Amino acid sequence: MAIKYRITDESMSYNGHTLWRIVEESTGKKGGWIEKESNLSHYEECMVWGEAKVYGNARVRGDALILDYAEVYDSANVLGRAKISGNARVGLNSLIIDLAQVSDFAKVIGNVVISGESRVEEEATILEQASVGGNAQVFGKAQIAGYASIKDYAKIYDEANIAGLIAVFGNAEVYNKAFVIGHGLIGGNSKVYGNAQLDGRCVLGHLAQVYGNAQLDGAVNLLDETEVYGNAVITGVVALLNQAKVFEDAQVTGDLVMIMGNASVHGEARIFDNASLYENCDVYGNATIKDFARVYGNAKVYEHAVVQDNAQVYGTAVVKGTTVVAGSEHISS
Image (tube, rainbow, N blue to C red; front, side, top):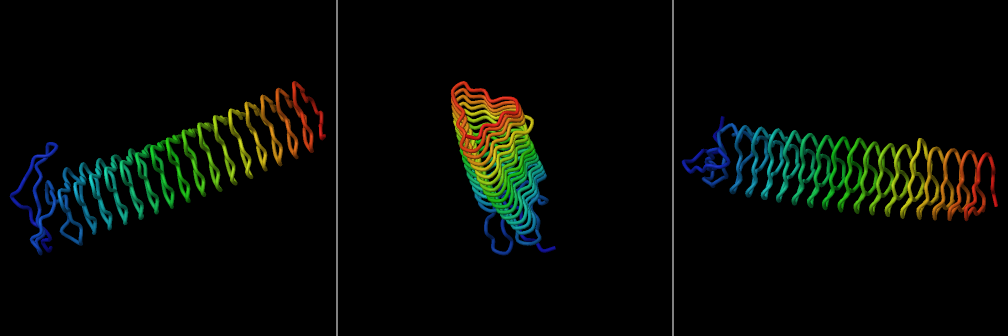
């Protein structure tokens, strides 16, 4: 075995460990600090430089580089062509592989896997069983925890917080102070931002957006350029498709609510149960749609109007005031 580096007599006491300065054997160039030879392989091009530290049972192998003031400790492994730099910290059983980079003041602590060409930067924190792969980027003060998976070209940044069994993939972005937990999927070119909160089994795809102070909780599906924003709240089993919008102070909850097409729900409108809204309908004010009622076409329902039971409002109908449309009644104009 070729001797790539040697341990010098220069030492320091650090976090309860005695660390030793290393020197590259072939050039005499001063390297960083390790606790013992098992911390840094003599094979391939891996190295510890600057004031970087590797200690505990941590191992650096392959062509991995530990630079600047970075630290790798506990039982962490850094291999492949991975790079840890700046003031980054990698600990517990974390695995950093491939061309992944952890830099700046980022922390990777847990049974975390950082792979591919992903980047964890600035003050981002990756914890527990989370993983970051592909070309994903996590930066700012973002935190990823639980079993969350960030991959492909996804970006998580600002003060966004993701936990649970969440997968963020494609070109999706989660940012600002968005909070996402549960068992959801966020893909395509979807965006979650502002102070939005998602829980449950939410699925977002195809340019869906959730922002402002919006809240989603349950089996909520948003696809095809749909938007939920303002102070809107959606719970239960709800599907928004094809550019539908729920915003302002609207609330949607039920066993199977469908909002499709260019349908809009806003103001303080309430949608319940198994109601369906589609095409270009507009429901707003303090209107209520519930039971198995349907509103579609270019219909408008607003003020304190109620559409319930199996009633249908469609065409160019306008239902307003305190009107109640019930039973199997149909109103088309």
